[in-house]
Length: 323
View 1 (tube, rainbow, N blue to C red):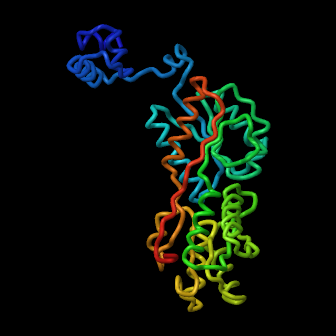
View 2 (cartoon, rainbow, N blue to C red; view 1 turned 90 degrees about the horizontal axis):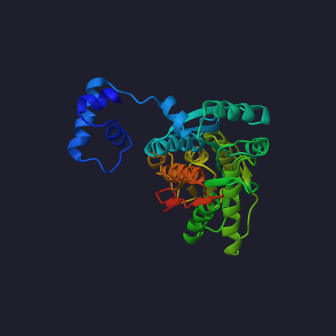
């Protein structure tokens, strides 16, 4: 910094102000300092800065080792939001989420001196493992888990999304609305099922038994073939877009017309959903907002804020599969 100050003809303090984006520096002085930085190839010594400020500007993220659209999109959104906030992410991707997996990951981040930790917790085993975590830095959990009274949580309102999808089908005159449910150990699947059931109850419509499945298009195809054999309902609300795409495939192969014979709604609004045959009506999750709100809650906690509960409203996207 002294070399930069000498080349730019300014004080050491002025260089520091430019690096910290202080508003009191005149534009021409700022430009001179930035030119000197570029000429000298100056880089901040973040390790030295962390010793002074006790902040590294980094965030640890613990996330399931899953290629599913939801967890992957959440991680990408978190990383982008953290960078936009001037922070960088270190990631631990875990194949299993017992205490023997989560605790070492948290200890690794603490050894790196992270300012805070985000845990993406879509499943019940993830939340159970959090009970063994003791961290001296703020922890924010991305989950709709109901049993985390002392931890800040941020989530998309999955129940509201399930309710909106079902209400849309009911408003279109569909009275027998079947739900293809995701795995029970996933909080998102539970909440979407709860929203479907609440919408049917509120409308005074009989609630048929949900059809349990995984998350894959192959699962949706198998359920679709089952429905063709046992009786196609007025509508199907699928717990994610992959299940819905599998349903569309099974119905098309059997000559069942969508939406004439049966309407289909998915959940997620994956990038390919608009190009399905027919284009898929679905519930869009606001992953960008999820990332931004999570980072904001973490920063607030670093500044002394209390426990937060953030719910993000999803958006129904209407296309040809359920107009």
